Amino acid sequence: MGHGQILYNGRMNPFEVAVYANVQAFATSLAIGLLIGLERERHEDAHAGVRTFALVGMLGCLCALLAERTDSGWIIGVGLLALAAMMITAVITDPPSDGDPGTTSIVALLACFGLGAAVWFGYATVAVMAAIATTALLYFKTQLHGITRALTHKDLISILQFAVLSFVILPILPDHDYGPFDTFNPHQIWWMVVLISGVSLAGYAALRVAGSRLGAPMIGFFGGMVSSTVTTMVFARHARAQADFLRMATVVILIANLVVLLRLTVVTLVVAPALLVPLATVLGMGLLFGLAGLLVVWRRMGAASEPPMPEVTNPTELKAALTFGLLYAAILFLAAWLQDVAGSKGLYAIALTSGLTDVDAITLSSLHLFNLDKLAAGDTVTSIALAVFANLLFKSGLVISIGGKALARRTLPGLGAIAVGLGLGIAIVIA
Image (tube, rainbow, N blue to C red; front, side):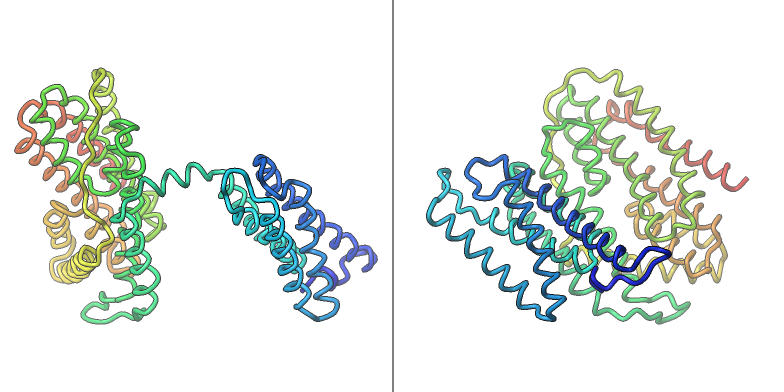
């Protein structure tokens, strides 16, 4: 419904209501044009500035009004074509001195026209959000180009592969429960693959873009987002090879393992929000104690050389996605079966075993069983905590075997502090 069709509201005259709504639509279109135009005004060679964009925003709104009144959408199409022709002519007759063809300004102007039309048709909120996004894209040109240049061919392939996982494979999978205990739901299983791949890809991309410029904290954070196990192995190896690298390696390893707790909290919020409070209590205690241990190491760490980049594999490769999906489905079935046969003890055994190398699969499996009412909240929290315990134990073994005694003396107290915090968190939740 357009603004010219507003119904009677309260005691106001219908004509006054319509006039007010129409004025509001044109004012919003004007504001959208001013917002985008302010950014374009910064460029000396731009053929359209703040006044032009403001007028184009209102022109779009006016064309939409006329199209609605005459029941002819061609008016909007003709307006777009005329606007594009004028801008192209201006660029051809007066080309920018910096060699820029000016296509960005042309597209921005056409977008401004379209947003003005959208406002008239009742999509003011969406139009304003799109205008803000458009302005941000125009303003952060340098930063976006820098990110693009930092991404390699392999990184772009990763993004495309994630798009295939999310928008090609996921929609065609059936959303029905199959098999024993109704645990096999292809759509739900693959959705978990997409969730973990997305989180890992975000960390992977950030790690590639940030590089080692931001130092140990960022390397530890993004490394933990991608793979805390790989990050622990890489920095344990470097610490053993370079004695002066011990403190920095300790910081990176501890941060990477603390990020695991944050990842699990975010996953819980998405998959099983009803369990967020008890699980966040347990993970939060582990995070709190781990941060205390990290602070001690951080205060002792002096100036150090530039940290190396952990070489991690593409988290969105189809083979890796299929492997995780199969692992998740297998653990989901085993957890349901052992829970039925042996009760919580069977589930705990699976958590301890699978958590040694991968804490995500058992976490997602436990959360899914909780959503199906096949697992109590206390058992779910405990199984996830046990998986994290096992994972910390495995990382401790990596630190000792790869990093040596010197790194172990600095790192194990921090990992142990995380474990103590988790234990206290479980005691608080169960009590």
